[in-house]
Structures are given as C-alpha cells and as structure tokens.
Length: 225
Image (tube, rainbow, N blue to C red; front, side, top):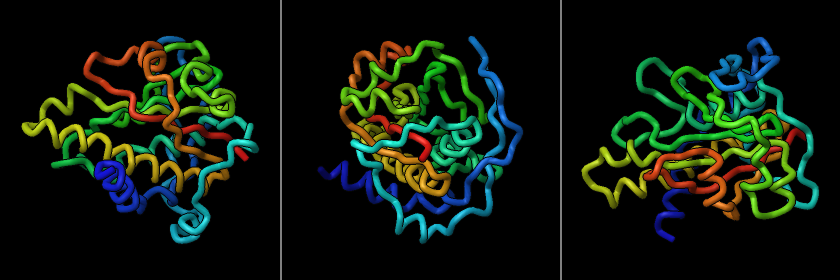
C-alpha cells in the first residue's frame, strides 16, 4: 500500500503540463507497417485551465465507456502528456528519479495495431499490426475500448540504479505520474479514460515483445466522447 500511495502522490505532483496539451500538427494519414511513424506536434498551450480539469478529472464509467476513436492528434497529445519532452535537455512532463531518461515504456494499442511511443523523437514504433486489445484487458468494456495504453517498466534502465529496491518503486511511482497526466490531458481533449489493473500480463507481454526484465504494470483505456 505504501508504494501505491506514493505513486498517487507523485502523479499529483506531475500534473502541471498535462492540460495545456492539444494537437496542432498536420494529421497523420497512415501508420508505418513495420517502421516508425512521426506524430504531429502536440499543442503546448491553450485549452481548459488546470484547475478546471482537476475538478472534472474522473474515470469514465464502464457501462457507458466512450466508443469514439482517437485521432493521431489525440494520441500525440496523450502520449506526450505521459512522458514527452517539454523543455530543452533531459526534461519531461513527468518526474524521473535522478533526472534519468524514462524508465517506463508506453505502448498504445488500437484497431490498427500496437505501437511503442518513442519520447525522444515523438513517434510511434510499430510492434504489430494485429488488434491485440482483446488480449490486454480482461473485462469486456476494456477489450472493446478504442485505444489502450500499456505502461511497462524498463528493466534494463532500472537495472542501472544501485539500489534495486528503490528502482522497483521508482517504476511504480512513475506510472502513477504518467497516468495522472493522461487523465488530465484526456479530459481537456474530450476523451474518456480509465486506469485498469485487470490486465492479462502474460499475453500482453508476448504481443508487445517486451524484454525479459520488463514488467507490465497496468493499462489505461481511452475513448473519444
């Protein structure tokens, strides 16, 4: 419980940049079959106020979960909110222990396939063109959601920390910060979001081809209202 509480607290600290995001770049029209797809630039200003989004933040109900598909501009914004670069140098929208590069990978799965978010180039790296969403969430509403984000701690990056007990908690704390940013950015964009723990981790890890030291933490389902 200590770890969970810490994750929530850190998530609340990390929210400052999320609600200023929306999309302004040229719309992507096609995803690369096997390579990398550059995302449009996220909007870094404007939109509803942070305090308004805090007041409205909530998990979309399971029974009436939104069914609208996210545009590539929407995905650009919520992925940037999760772990994008927001300043020159090693600066991100969420806090990283000791200023290290992100040690949690963010994947997004849609009807078009599953993709790894590359925070450095703000792009999607194609993992598979299969629709793997039904194998991620274990609940029906989650399986049918238009998009699913998956948070995976990066075992190789976390192994670089001398204190491995701390390193494991760093990863969980970071997911808390990322998910809160996604909640707020989603609310600003009219996207329903819900963080879910009920995930088939074995199937998800297999589909995403994660490393042997990586760990699937949880997922977040998204749908446009």
